[in-house]
Length: 453
Ligand SMILES: *Cc1c(COP(=O)(O)O)cnc(C)c1O
Image (tube, rainbow, N blue to C red):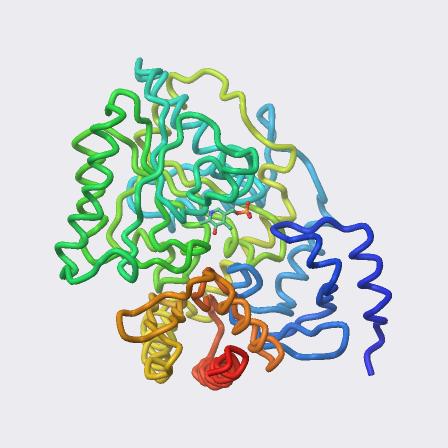
Protein backbone atom coordinates (compact mmCIF):
# COMPACT_ATOMS: atom_id res chain seq x y z
CA UNK A 1 0.00 0.00 0.00
CA UNK A 2 1.15 3.47 -0.80
CA UNK A 3 0.67 6.46 1.46
CA UNK A 4 -0.50 8.43 -1.58
CA UNK A 5 -4.03 8.56 -2.88
CA UNK A 6 -3.37 8.27 -6.59
CA UNK A 7 -6.93 9.04 -7.66
CA UNK A 8 -7.00 12.25 -5.63
CA UNK A 9 -3.70 13.41 -7.17
CA UNK A 10 -4.95 12.66 -10.65
CA UNK A 11 -8.00 14.72 -9.99
CA UNK A 12 -6.00 17.75 -8.81
CA UNK A 13 -3.51 17.42 -11.59
CA UNK A 14 -5.92 16.85 -14.45
CA UNK A 15 -8.26 19.59 -13.23
CA UNK A 16 -5.71 22.37 -12.85
CA UNK A 17 -2.29 21.56 -14.20
CA UNK A 18 -1.39 22.24 -17.84
CA UNK A 19 1.67 20.07 -18.51
CA UNK A 20 4.47 20.68 -21.02
CA UNK A 21 4.35 18.73 -24.30
CA UNK A 22 1.05 17.07 -23.43
CA UNK A 23 -2.18 16.33 -25.28
CA UNK A 24 -4.57 17.69 -22.65
CA UNK A 25 -7.63 15.85 -23.82
CA UNK A 26 -6.00 12.45 -23.75
CA UNK A 27 -4.35 13.22 -20.40
CA UNK A 28 -7.77 14.05 -19.00
CA UNK A 29 -9.03 10.68 -20.16
CA UNK A 30 -6.06 8.65 -18.97
CA UNK A 31 -4.76 10.52 -15.92
CA UNK A 32 -1.10 11.07 -15.06
CA UNK A 33 1.56 9.03 -13.39
CA UNK A 34 2.54 10.76 -10.16
CA UNK A 35 6.20 10.28 -9.27
CA UNK A 36 6.57 10.58 -5.53
CA UNK A 37 10.16 9.61 -4.85
CA UNK A 38 13.39 8.47 -6.44
CA UNK A 39 16.45 6.65 -5.28
CA UNK A 40 19.60 5.67 -7.15
CA UNK A 41 18.45 4.63 -10.61
CA UNK A 42 14.78 4.09 -9.75
CA UNK A 43 11.76 6.39 -9.69
CA UNK A 44 8.80 5.42 -7.53
CA UNK A 45 5.19 6.29 -8.39
CA UNK A 46 2.22 6.94 -6.13
CA UNK A 47 1.13 3.30 -6.40
CA UNK A 48 4.51 2.18 -5.11
CA UNK A 49 5.83 0.90 -8.47
CA UNK A 50 9.59 1.07 -8.85
CA UNK A 51 10.65 1.98 -12.37
CA UNK A 52 14.25 1.79 -13.63
CA UNK A 53 14.92 5.23 -15.09
CA UNK A 54 16.88 4.65 -18.29
CA UNK A 55 16.18 8.27 -19.32
CA UNK A 56 17.81 9.94 -16.28
CA UNK A 57 14.68 12.05 -15.90
CA UNK A 58 14.81 14.11 -19.08
CA UNK A 59 18.43 13.30 -20.01
CA UNK A 60 19.67 15.17 -16.97
CA UNK A 61 20.10 13.15 -13.75
CA UNK A 62 23.70 12.25 -14.58
CA UNK A 63 24.70 11.23 -11.03
CA UNK A 64 21.45 9.42 -10.20
CA UNK A 65 18.86 10.23 -7.55
CA UNK A 66 19.18 10.62 -3.81
CA UNK A 67 22.68 12.12 -3.69
CA UNK A 68 23.14 13.49 -0.20
CA UNK A 69 26.16 15.58 -1.30
CA UNK A 70 23.88 17.67 -3.49
CA UNK A 71 21.29 18.07 -0.74
CA UNK A 72 24.04 19.20 1.63
CA UNK A 73 25.51 21.65 -0.87
CA UNK A 74 22.09 23.24 -1.43
CA UNK A 75 21.30 23.38 2.29
CA UNK A 76 24.61 24.96 3.19
CA UNK A 77 24.34 27.56 0.46
CA UNK A 78 20.72 28.37 1.28
CA UNK A 79 21.72 29.10 4.85
CA UNK A 80 24.68 31.28 3.84
CA UNK A 81 23.08 33.13 0.92
CA UNK A 82 19.87 31.79 -0.63
CA UNK A 83 19.77 34.39 -3.35
CA UNK A 84 21.46 37.38 -4.71
CA UNK A 85 21.64 38.51 -8.32
CA UNK A 86 24.71 38.79 -10.52
CA UNK A 87 23.61 42.00 -12.29
CA UNK A 88 25.31 45.37 -11.94
CA UNK A 89 28.77 44.13 -10.98
CA UNK A 90 27.71 41.97 -8.05
CA UNK A 91 28.55 38.29 -7.78
CA UNK A 92 28.55 35.37 -5.39
CA UNK A 93 31.22 32.84 -4.49
CA UNK A 94 29.69 29.66 -6.01
CA UNK A 95 28.94 31.36 -9.35
CA UNK A 96 32.48 32.71 -9.60
CA UNK A 97 34.00 29.35 -8.66
CA UNK A 98 31.76 27.53 -11.14
CA UNK A 99 32.67 29.90 -13.97
CA UNK A 100 36.35 29.20 -13.41
CA UNK A 101 35.78 25.46 -13.20
CA UNK A 102 33.75 25.34 -16.42
CA UNK A 103 36.34 27.44 -18.23
CA UNK A 104 38.99 24.91 -17.19
CA UNK A 105 36.94 21.92 -18.31
CA UNK A 106 35.83 23.45 -21.60
CA UNK A 107 37.56 22.75 -24.91
CA UNK A 108 40.62 24.91 -25.70
CA UNK A 109 39.89 28.49 -26.59
CA UNK A 110 36.82 28.73 -24.37
CA UNK A 111 37.37 30.77 -21.22
CA UNK A 112 34.12 32.55 -20.38
CA UNK A 113 30.70 31.54 -19.10
CA UNK A 114 27.24 33.16 -19.12
CA UNK A 115 24.72 31.63 -16.70
CA UNK A 116 20.99 31.14 -17.25
CA UNK A 117 18.37 28.74 -15.93
CA UNK A 118 17.48 26.38 -18.76
CA UNK A 119 18.73 25.09 -22.06
CA UNK A 120 16.19 27.28 -23.84
CA UNK A 121 17.51 30.38 -22.12
CA UNK A 122 21.08 29.36 -22.93
CA UNK A 123 20.18 29.16 -26.60
CA UNK A 124 18.27 32.45 -26.53
CA UNK A 125 21.38 33.95 -24.98
CA UNK A 126 23.50 32.52 -27.79
CA UNK A 127 21.27 34.07 -30.44
CA UNK A 128 21.51 37.46 -28.71
CA UNK A 129 25.25 37.10 -28.29
CA UNK A 130 26.14 36.08 -31.85
CA UNK A 131 24.03 38.87 -33.36
CA UNK A 132 25.61 41.34 -30.94
CA UNK A 133 29.02 40.00 -31.99
CA UNK A 134 28.37 40.48 -35.72
CA UNK A 135 27.03 43.98 -35.14
CA UNK A 136 30.28 44.81 -33.34
CA UNK A 137 32.16 43.32 -36.29
CA UNK A 138 30.37 45.81 -38.53
CA UNK A 139 28.17 43.14 -40.12
CA UNK A 140 24.77 43.64 -38.47
CA UNK A 141 23.05 42.04 -41.45
CA UNK A 142 24.44 38.65 -40.38
CA UNK A 143 21.22 37.55 -38.62
CA UNK A 144 20.23 34.10 -39.87
CA UNK A 145 20.86 31.04 -37.75
CA UNK A 146 21.00 27.71 -39.56
CA UNK A 147 20.03 24.56 -37.67
CA UNK A 148 18.70 21.11 -38.58
CA UNK A 149 15.39 19.30 -38.91
CA UNK A 150 14.64 17.33 -35.74
CA UNK A 151 17.08 19.60 -33.89
CA UNK A 152 15.89 20.49 -30.41
CA UNK A 153 17.13 23.71 -28.85
CA UNK A 154 14.35 24.38 -26.36
CA UNK A 155 10.87 25.79 -26.16
CA UNK A 156 11.04 29.57 -25.78
CA UNK A 157 9.91 31.27 -28.97
CA UNK A 158 13.46 31.82 -30.17
CA UNK A 159 14.70 28.35 -29.21
CA UNK A 160 11.70 26.65 -30.80
CA UNK A 161 12.02 28.73 -33.98
CA UNK A 162 15.67 27.69 -34.10
CA UNK A 163 14.86 24.02 -33.56
CA UNK A 164 13.65 21.73 -36.28
CA UNK A 165 10.40 20.51 -34.77
CA UNK A 166 7.60 21.27 -37.24
CA UNK A 167 4.85 20.92 -34.63
CA UNK A 168 6.41 23.71 -32.56
CA UNK A 169 6.79 25.97 -35.61
CA UNK A 170 3.09 25.50 -36.32
CA UNK A 171 2.16 26.68 -32.82
CA UNK A 172 3.48 30.22 -32.89
CA UNK A 173 7.22 29.59 -32.95
CA UNK A 174 8.33 30.41 -36.48
CA UNK A 175 10.31 33.63 -36.17
CA UNK A 176 12.09 34.92 -39.28
CA UNK A 177 15.84 34.37 -39.83
CA UNK A 178 15.89 30.73 -38.74
CA UNK A 179 16.60 28.14 -41.43
CA UNK A 180 16.82 24.35 -41.16
CA UNK A 181 18.72 21.81 -43.20
CA UNK A 182 18.36 18.02 -43.21
CA UNK A 183 20.23 16.17 -40.43
CA UNK A 184 22.78 13.39 -41.03
CA UNK A 185 20.15 10.80 -40.16
CA UNK A 186 21.67 7.65 -41.58
CA UNK A 187 18.71 5.42 -40.82
CA UNK A 188 16.51 7.57 -43.07
CA UNK A 189 18.86 9.21 -45.56
CA UNK A 190 22.01 7.12 -45.97
CA UNK A 191 20.74 4.40 -48.30
CA UNK A 192 23.68 2.61 -49.91
CA UNK A 193 26.19 5.40 -49.32
CA UNK A 194 29.29 4.57 -47.27
CA UNK A 195 29.88 6.70 -44.17
CA UNK A 196 32.46 8.99 -45.77
CA UNK A 197 30.17 9.76 -48.69
CA UNK A 198 27.18 10.24 -46.43
CA UNK A 199 29.20 12.59 -44.19
CA UNK A 200 30.14 14.70 -47.19
CA UNK A 201 26.65 14.63 -48.67
CA UNK A 202 24.90 15.65 -45.47
CA UNK A 203 27.43 18.43 -44.82
CA UNK A 204 26.81 19.70 -48.36
CA UNK A 205 23.23 20.52 -47.28
CA UNK A 206 24.78 23.27 -45.13
CA UNK A 207 26.78 24.59 -48.08
CA UNK A 208 23.58 24.65 -50.18
CA UNK A 209 21.69 26.63 -47.53
CA UNK A 210 24.56 29.13 -47.29
CA UNK A 211 24.54 29.57 -51.06
CA UNK A 212 20.79 30.08 -51.00
CA UNK A 213 20.69 32.68 -48.21
CA UNK A 214 24.13 34.23 -48.64
CA UNK A 215 26.95 34.03 -46.10
CA UNK A 216 26.63 37.79 -45.57
CA UNK A 217 23.29 37.17 -43.92
CA UNK A 218 24.21 34.15 -41.81
CA UNK A 219 25.36 34.55 -38.21
CA UNK A 220 25.84 30.96 -37.09
CA UNK A 221 25.21 27.28 -37.58
CA UNK A 222 24.02 25.43 -34.47
CA UNK A 223 23.98 21.68 -33.97
CA UNK A 224 23.68 19.13 -31.22
CA UNK A 225 26.75 16.86 -31.63
CA UNK A 226 24.22 14.04 -31.25
CA UNK A 227 20.61 15.04 -31.79
CA UNK A 228 18.80 13.97 -28.62
CA UNK A 229 15.09 14.77 -28.61
CA UNK A 230 15.15 14.35 -32.39
CA UNK A 231 15.78 10.65 -31.84
CA UNK A 232 19.45 10.13 -30.91
CA UNK A 233 20.75 10.87 -34.40
CA UNK A 234 24.47 10.08 -34.50
CA UNK A 235 26.39 11.68 -37.38
CA UNK A 236 28.76 9.61 -39.52
CA UNK A 237 32.47 10.06 -38.76
CA UNK A 238 33.81 13.11 -40.58
CA UNK A 239 30.50 14.99 -40.76
CA UNK A 240 31.55 17.72 -38.36
CA UNK A 241 34.97 18.07 -40.01
CA UNK A 242 33.18 19.07 -43.20
CA UNK A 243 30.71 21.24 -41.28
CA UNK A 244 33.44 23.12 -39.43
CA UNK A 245 35.40 23.70 -42.62
CA UNK A 246 32.27 25.07 -44.33
CA UNK A 247 31.62 27.40 -41.38
CA UNK A 248 35.21 28.64 -41.47
CA UNK A 249 35.20 29.13 -45.25
CA UNK A 250 32.05 31.26 -45.05
CA UNK A 251 32.90 33.11 -41.83
CA UNK A 252 29.94 31.68 -39.91
CA UNK A 253 30.12 30.94 -36.19
CA UNK A 254 29.78 27.30 -35.16
CA UNK A 255 27.67 26.62 -32.06
CA UNK A 256 27.41 23.25 -30.32
CA UNK A 257 24.25 22.60 -28.31
CA UNK A 258 25.58 20.24 -25.66
CA UNK A 259 22.61 20.48 -23.32
CA UNK A 260 22.37 16.67 -23.41
CA UNK A 261 25.86 15.65 -24.49
CA UNK A 262 27.66 17.84 -21.94
CA UNK A 263 28.97 16.73 -18.56
CA UNK A 264 30.08 13.24 -19.38
CA UNK A 265 27.42 11.51 -21.42
CA UNK A 266 29.72 10.74 -24.35
CA UNK A 267 32.79 9.76 -22.33
CA UNK A 268 34.43 13.19 -22.12
CA UNK A 269 33.25 16.32 -20.34
CA UNK A 270 31.86 17.52 -23.65
CA UNK A 271 31.06 15.75 -26.93
CA UNK A 272 33.09 18.51 -28.56
CA UNK A 273 36.11 16.82 -26.99
CA UNK A 274 34.93 13.30 -27.88
CA UNK A 275 34.40 14.34 -31.50
CA UNK A 276 37.28 16.83 -31.83
CA UNK A 277 35.08 19.88 -32.39
CA UNK A 278 36.15 23.50 -31.86
CA UNK A 279 32.87 25.41 -31.44
CA UNK A 280 32.74 29.18 -30.93
CA UNK A 281 30.03 28.74 -28.29
CA UNK A 282 28.55 25.80 -26.38
CA UNK A 283 25.11 25.62 -24.75
CA UNK A 284 25.02 23.43 -21.65
CA UNK A 285 22.38 22.70 -18.98
CA UNK A 286 20.76 19.42 -17.85
CA UNK A 287 23.73 17.40 -16.50
CA UNK A 288 25.36 20.56 -15.12
CA UNK A 289 23.35 20.12 -11.91
CA UNK A 290 22.03 16.62 -12.67
CA UNK A 291 18.62 18.34 -12.63
CA UNK A 292 18.73 18.93 -8.86
CA UNK A 293 18.49 22.66 -9.56
CA UNK A 294 17.60 24.49 -12.77
CA UNK A 295 20.73 25.98 -14.29
CA UNK A 296 22.39 26.42 -17.67
CA UNK A 297 25.72 27.79 -18.79
CA UNK A 298 26.77 29.19 -22.14
CA UNK A 299 30.46 28.54 -22.72
CA UNK A 300 31.77 31.43 -24.76
CA UNK A 301 34.88 31.07 -26.91
CA UNK A 302 37.59 33.72 -27.08
CA UNK A 303 36.64 35.08 -30.50
CA UNK A 304 33.20 36.21 -29.33
CA UNK A 305 34.15 36.91 -25.70
CA UNK A 306 37.01 39.27 -26.58
CA UNK A 307 34.81 41.30 -28.89
CA UNK A 308 31.87 41.70 -26.54
CA UNK A 309 34.12 42.37 -23.55
CA UNK A 310 36.45 44.87 -25.21
CA UNK A 311 34.10 46.70 -27.56
CA UNK A 312 30.53 45.80 -26.66
CA UNK A 313 29.52 48.29 -23.98
CA UNK A 314 26.68 46.98 -21.85
CA UNK A 315 25.20 43.64 -22.91
CA UNK A 316 21.49 44.22 -22.33
CA UNK A 317 20.65 40.66 -21.42
CA UNK A 318 20.31 38.43 -18.36
CA UNK A 319 17.94 36.73 -15.97
CA UNK A 320 16.94 37.36 -12.36
CA UNK A 321 18.37 33.96 -11.46
CA UNK A 322 21.50 34.02 -13.67
CA UNK A 323 24.34 32.62 -11.57
CA UNK A 324 21.95 31.59 -8.78
CA UNK A 325 24.13 30.77 -5.75
CA UNK A 326 22.23 27.62 -4.74
CA UNK A 327 22.20 26.24 -8.27
CA UNK A 328 25.90 27.04 -8.66
CA UNK A 329 26.74 25.33 -5.35
CA UNK A 330 24.83 22.24 -6.46
CA UNK A 331 26.56 22.30 -9.84
CA UNK A 332 29.97 22.38 -8.15
CA UNK A 333 29.06 19.44 -5.90
CA UNK A 334 27.67 17.57 -8.91
CA UNK A 335 30.89 18.06 -10.89
CA UNK A 336 32.79 16.84 -7.81
CA UNK A 337 30.78 13.60 -7.86
CA UNK A 338 31.34 13.06 -11.58
CA UNK A 339 35.06 13.59 -11.07
CA UNK A 340 35.56 11.66 -7.83
CA UNK A 341 33.59 8.63 -8.98
CA UNK A 342 35.38 8.54 -12.33
CA UNK A 343 32.05 8.52 -14.14
CA UNK A 344 33.40 9.89 -17.39
CA UNK A 345 36.10 7.24 -17.69
CA UNK A 346 33.52 4.63 -16.78
CA UNK A 347 31.22 5.74 -19.61
CA UNK A 348 34.10 5.90 -22.08
CA UNK A 349 35.82 2.65 -21.20
CA UNK A 350 33.18 0.45 -19.63
CA UNK A 351 29.45 1.20 -19.68
CA UNK A 352 29.40 3.00 -23.04
CA UNK A 353 30.98 0.11 -24.96
CA UNK A 354 28.97 -2.38 -22.88
CA UNK A 355 25.69 -0.66 -23.78
CA UNK A 356 26.58 -0.87 -27.47
CA UNK A 357 27.34 -4.57 -27.11
CA UNK A 358 24.21 -5.30 -25.05
CA UNK A 359 21.93 -3.53 -27.53
CA UNK A 360 23.04 -6.01 -30.19
CA UNK A 361 21.06 -8.64 -28.26
CA UNK A 362 17.93 -6.87 -29.49
CA UNK A 363 19.01 -6.53 -33.11
CA UNK A 364 17.46 -9.83 -34.19
CA UNK A 365 14.02 -8.96 -32.82
CA UNK A 366 11.41 -8.79 -35.61
CA UNK A 367 10.43 -5.22 -34.64
CA UNK A 368 13.96 -3.82 -34.52
CA UNK A 369 15.30 -2.08 -37.63
CA UNK A 370 18.49 -0.71 -36.08
CA UNK A 371 20.19 -0.25 -32.73
CA UNK A 372 22.72 2.52 -32.31
CA UNK A 373 24.50 4.22 -29.44
CA UNK A 374 27.22 6.70 -28.57
CA UNK A 375 28.43 6.81 -24.96
CA UNK A 376 25.30 6.52 -22.85
CA UNK A 377 22.88 7.65 -25.53
CA UNK A 378 21.02 5.06 -27.55
CA UNK A 379 18.09 4.37 -29.84
CA UNK A 380 16.28 1.18 -30.79
CA UNK A 381 14.44 1.93 -34.05
CA UNK A 382 11.22 -0.05 -34.48
CA UNK A 383 10.07 -0.91 -37.98
CA UNK A 384 7.07 -2.53 -39.65
CA UNK A 385 9.36 -4.82 -41.63
CA UNK A 386 13.04 -5.51 -41.08
CA UNK A 387 13.52 -6.02 -44.81
CA UNK A 388 13.90 -2.63 -46.37
CA UNK A 389 13.50 -1.57 -43.61
CA UNK A 390 9.88 -0.50 -43.93
CA UNK A 391 8.71 2.14 -41.45
CA UNK A 392 5.27 2.16 -39.82
CA UNK A 393 2.55 4.11 -41.66
CA UNK A 394 1.19 5.71 -38.49
CA UNK A 395 4.53 7.12 -37.33
CA UNK A 396 4.93 7.19 -33.56
CA UNK A 397 2.01 4.93 -32.62
CA UNK A 398 4.11 1.79 -32.18
CA UNK A 399 6.78 3.66 -30.24
CA UNK A 400 4.20 4.74 -27.68
CA UNK A 401 2.80 1.19 -27.40
CA UNK A 402 6.27 -0.19 -26.73
CA UNK A 403 7.13 2.57 -24.28
CA UNK A 404 3.94 1.95 -22.29
CA UNK A 405 4.64 -1.78 -22.12
CA UNK A 406 8.15 -1.00 -20.90
CA UNK A 407 6.88 1.33 -18.16
CA UNK A 408 4.34 -1.28 -17.05
CA UNK A 409 7.20 -3.74 -16.76
CA UNK A 410 9.29 -1.29 -14.72
CA UNK A 411 11.51 0.41 -17.31
CA UNK A 412 11.36 4.08 -18.27
CA UNK A 413 12.37 4.59 -21.90
CA UNK A 414 11.19 7.37 -24.16
CA UNK A 415 9.60 7.09 -27.59
CA UNK A 416 10.70 9.46 -30.36
CA UNK A 417 8.68 8.65 -33.45
CA UNK A 418 9.17 4.85 -33.45
CA UNK A 419 12.57 4.90 -31.79
CA UNK A 420 12.98 3.78 -28.19
CA UNK A 421 15.43 6.15 -26.54
CA UNK A 422 17.88 5.49 -23.71
CA UNK A 423 19.90 8.11 -21.84
CA UNK A 424 20.58 6.62 -18.40
CA UNK A 425 22.42 8.11 -15.44
CA UNK A 426 26.22 7.95 -15.82
CA UNK A 427 26.24 5.89 -12.62
CA UNK A 428 24.50 3.02 -14.43
CA UNK A 429 26.22 -0.35 -14.04
CA UNK A 430 26.49 -3.31 -16.38
CA UNK A 431 23.77 -4.98 -14.32
CA UNK A 432 21.45 -2.04 -14.87
CA UNK A 433 22.12 -2.24 -18.60
CA UNK A 434 21.34 -5.98 -18.58
CA UNK A 435 18.05 -5.22 -16.82
CA UNK A 436 17.19 -2.59 -19.43
CA UNK A 437 17.85 -4.99 -22.29
CA UNK A 438 15.84 -7.81 -20.69
CA UNK A 439 12.80 -5.61 -20.01
CA UNK A 440 13.07 -3.96 -23.42
CA UNK A 441 12.96 -7.38 -25.08
CA UNK A 442 9.83 -8.30 -23.13
CA UNK A 443 8.26 -4.95 -24.02
CA UNK A 444 9.06 -5.61 -27.70
CA UNK A 445 7.35 -9.01 -27.44
CA UNK A 446 4.33 -7.38 -25.75
CA UNK A 447 4.25 -4.88 -28.60
CA UNK A 448 4.13 -7.66 -31.18
CA UNK A 449 1.11 -9.09 -29.37
CA UNK A 450 -0.61 -5.69 -29.21
CA UNK A 451 -0.01 -5.29 -32.95
CA UNK A 452 -1.59 -8.73 -33.46
CA UNK A 453 1.57 -10.30 -34.92
C1 LIG B 1 16.50 19.92 -23.30
C2 LIG B 1 17.24 20.62 -24.36
C3 LIG B 1 17.19 22.01 -24.51
C4 LIG B 1 16.25 22.86 -23.71
O1 LIG B 1 16.51 22.83 -22.36
P1 LIG B 1 15.37 23.35 -21.33
O2 LIG B 1 16.10 23.34 -20.03
O3 LIG B 1 14.24 22.37 -21.40
O4 LIG B 1 14.98 24.70 -21.76
C5 LIG B 1 18.01 22.61 -25.43
N1 LIG B 1 18.84 21.88 -26.20
C6 LIG B 1 18.90 20.54 -26.10
C7 LIG B 1 19.86 19.80 -26.97
C8 LIG B 1 18.09 19.87 -25.20
O5 LIG B 1 18.13 18.54 -25.13
